[in-house]
Length: 184
Image 1 (tube, rainbow, N blue to C red):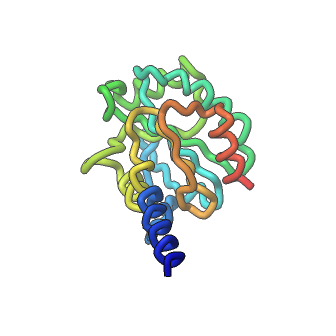
Image 2: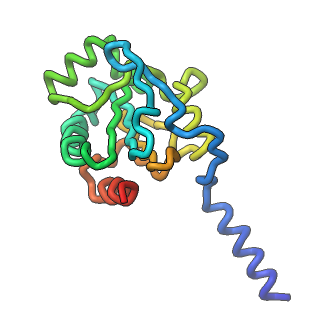
């Protein structure tokens, strides 16, 4: 009897330290659409069976230099069932004040960005793009950006496999390991 009580207590304690990462996944990432910086449709269904890394970005943020490593990641993995998607947002500190044309010019001239970029959207709260609402619903709070350059890794199944805070650089060992695990 004492062992059963210990076992139940252990299960209860463990439940406080875990989050619901399974999600219902009535939809997959491939069910969502954005527009690109030129206003053309950018359908995630085009990336079916690929790993998608979604990063909300801003031109005037202290983390903006991560664009450089994002481009390096794109250059290295783009031919390996992978897509990197930059999602400009003005939600944090008003650090993306420009319009889509300004954002495109900045990214191309300052960092030589060649990976796909969406048009500017909201990534948090009631006005969040449907992809971000879906991410929160299915992966929990860790999928909600707390600042610019938050990273979401979507596996080939179309479900979120990992998330990373803004301080985690895309070239970090931790991020690269998660990306490569998703690619395997």
